[in-house]
Length: 305
Image 1 (tube, helix red, strand yellow):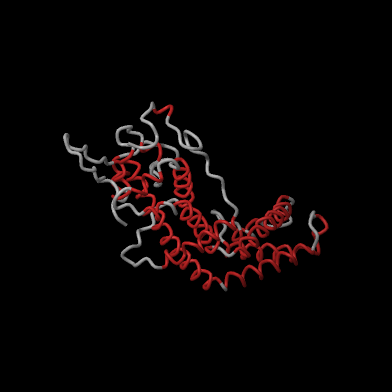
Image 2: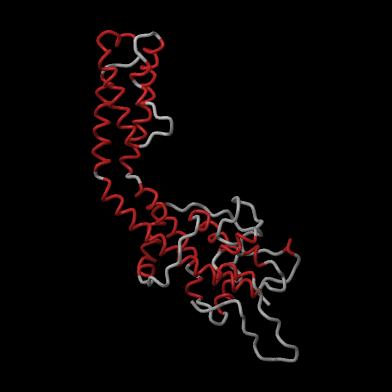
């Protein structure tokens, strides 16, 4: 039926590797370029065409890229099937790269890069400040209750980092004249901590715009994910039709949805039910042509976009 012979599964190979190569992480410039190439198509999607975003973007993009490469020999036949949008299928790798780009933008937009860098500095600084405070407490020079409010029980948020920086420096400022010489920390670090706290506070105060920008990227991710899901669904249906007798379509085009623990191929009934019908439908098979018929058998799997 397909150009890949009906041989034992151990001998079924594509033009690259029997199990498909591990997708190589492309340079960020390639990802951004991919998004620019599909942006107009993504923006043109209507509200009714958009699909709910239920993907793990890095996982889905990786699976789609590997499947696209593994199906290299099948692509011409898949694209030639009736009611199959071949142009859409051929853009799977492009959609995957674009999805990685917009997902990265969503992640970075949620927290401004400058704030993330400031938080890293703040974490290091707080370790040093707390060490100095603990040293003074151990030697009875400082009451523990003075700094209790600056030691959150849970992981610090950005705002509590600011509070802790201000609080610890304030406490240390108060005892510095008498005990500063006992600490392995220059007084200039207190000024640096105070400056960092002020800078972070200013950054936090300007996050409204960043949150709005993040919402835009979330919307773009949903649109690009829709393009990838539609194209990959077409590929899965085509491969399911062409590899029906070999019963190995899943080896070529596994689901791009994470089912259970990542890497666990066992899918529960609940997981299958939660998947979009068009994606799960790739498991279906075309009907066997009636005996004696000479007309071309039309696939049931592939459907129009």
